[in-house]
Length: 159
Image (tube, rainbow, N blue to C red; front, side, top):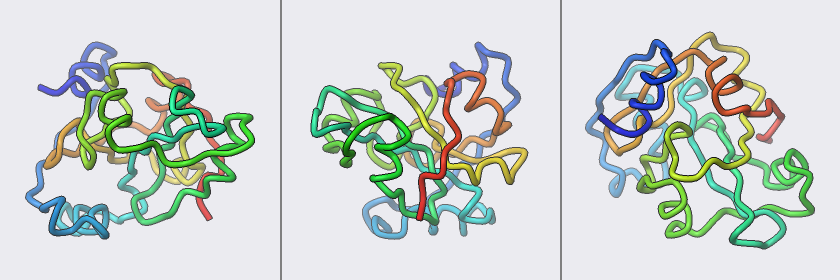
């Protein structure tokens, strides 16, 4: 059981686990789309978890949760966290901070609790999917869990 699944169980969140075979390395450019197709889920309901650096500081990190079918607007993300700028965190920093590998970062059960924002499109769905904490594993859970358990701000993050 991954830390993400343990976290949800500890907080009595009903969730379901979905396994997939999509190869991260073979589908790197369209990984989210490939996973969504394999799971037969709309890509805009499958959310990715990204780690960003605020104001050019690798120690000032935040989490952005957005549909896998969309691109996060980093200017919007910076605005959400009251920062002047935002950049994608280096993969090594993201992995070390969260405890998860790239392609398997879950918003739940991360090593370090970070400020979190979720794209406003999440409110279109009663449940959404995110990584369950490793490649090959997605979890479906009530969208409200992001706000209640992670204190995530709902914000327009995507173009």
